[in-house]
Image (tube, rainbow, N blue to C red; front, top):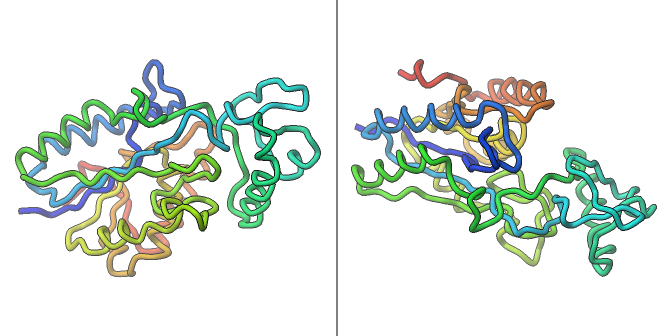
Length: 266
């Protein structure tokens, strides 16, 4: 008998600490294999599975391929770029005609007070190996589909190249001209409608998991949040952001969510 709904955030090759991954998160491969093993053993207890997938073009506002410095040289990964940097000419888009639009974007991003633009390595390009789901988890999901007769709901996010999207539910700065960047009410409704405990796993704890669950806390009912369990042995923070990950878990607990490891599930 089903006891759980499962939400897995961005369990993709480029986030795994394995060879050729573009943006590896220490511990992520073990996290996803642990989840895959559990799913194989408990498939009959899972009523639904939703997987979100970070999905990008090779060039976007948050990646190295978009930017150059004042001398026309590449900008290294993990560079912080502010609206003031762009206005001063310290950094600039490779395609100069985007300058004004990007400046407005950075100003809007910073006005929110939650985020500044970090230039990430190119990762999770749609259609590439890096975009694919962890092999073991993908196989476990396929097996669940065969045995349950149901289909895993796969949700693409981050499709617009001129706005970042950490959360599964909305871009950092939603665009009025692209519904994909606006609040994904359909996904929220799907998660809200579940009657089982909602298990949440994925990568990275400090970034996309935190942003996604923050949006869940803002939009789901208290009753549904009380049914939500964050699987702490199936999510890891980006190196250097461990404190942010722990702060998020504390925030979630204060909002009524539970944290647990797979082996402790009742």
